[in-house]
Length: 328
Image 1: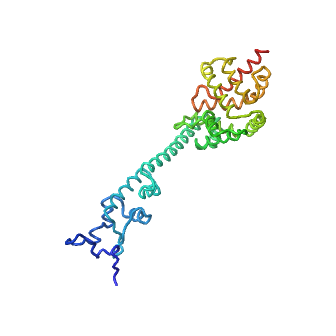
Image 2: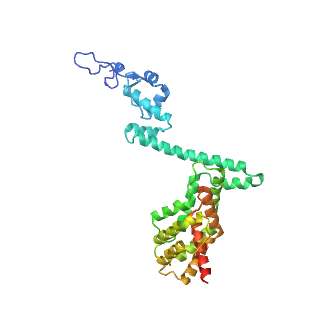
Image 3: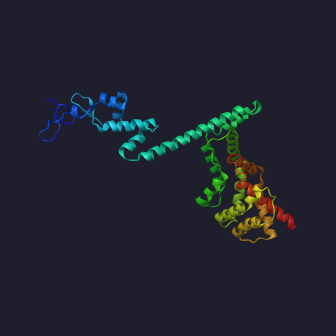
């Protein structure tokens, strides 16, 4: 017997108001060729969308796909979203109501920003190699080849500083430190910025530097009662010193140094005495490591800051040394 399922037979009369002639499936729906002509989407693509469950269809008695009128609008939306670069999973989420169009478009834009940043990084890297002298071109190529993407390079710097934090530090405090110590990769970097960032990554890859910083941190962890309190106090001292560093003032004794010493004294259970200052100078002397100096100079080259956190901290360390010599 012939198939009599009303959803599948184009010959069965569809329900209609009393007195009106019922419409057939063919009259109520569109064929795949008609849908292609109305939307400009190739037949082959429509078949693919049907197979993927993006566009719904029914089958006629002859086995042909038939589409309701809503398929025109639905397919038009799919075409427009595909034109913006959205993938089928994202489009399916919009059509199913799992996510709004604004959310899907925002996610695609964010992904595009990442790709554009990667391309800008690669372009600057290529220019940096191109502009290098023949004698240094091979070395620069090796340096930049190890840092192919800006965000991956930043992750390496963040990981380095996280590993140096032996004492417990809150995530909020660590994030604040990272914001000052680890520059964001520029959205459209210049060749010198890419080279400086690559040198930063190479610098933190020095195992002896990490080993030295860890050794110092392990000594301090037994002396410092509250690492967050210390970092807050030192940050306040650096903020006081910043205008002086920007103005090119020589290291000196003053309220900014007093705040720096007080921050250390508070968490070490001591007072601001000449003996304590001498002990503190010996403790912070590691900050004068040439590699640390270079790190902060490179940070400035990448970020464009006239005075980095490290520069102000080193200015305070030099001020501490001057205060001890003046006392003597």
